[in-house]
Image (cartoon, rainbow, N blue to C red; front, side, top):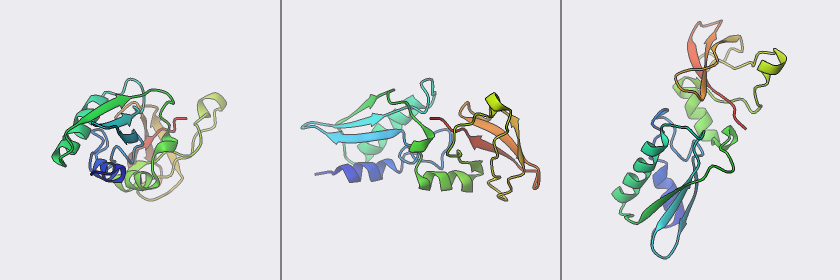
Length: 161
């Protein structure tokens, strides 16, 4: 009999299509895995309701579990509670940093309201002397920054709560 822990371990092998160094488990998209008497129900939450990667994630989850011999799989998408960057695992935050994307700070960015820029450390040199170039990076969930010290551009995974 396959266990919930095995299912979640196998899902660690399913990459986010937009940030391939993160698994759907690291990202916090996989909320739960439950077995009823006939099939596994995998509950997922999109990072935001219009996320274009969700269909690919669903297909990849099913494909991975079929590859492991788990043939009866259903996916349930829930929108509430809404996904938050708090759901990113610590391992996922480290993977983002190593990949060159600054992980989200643990506070919601209110700089737009109070004109205080968010300080985002450079994932390459860890300098805090950075600046936002654009509120939107390669995807809507990221902002584009540049380090003023090493001059490297980088994405910042926005904090959502």
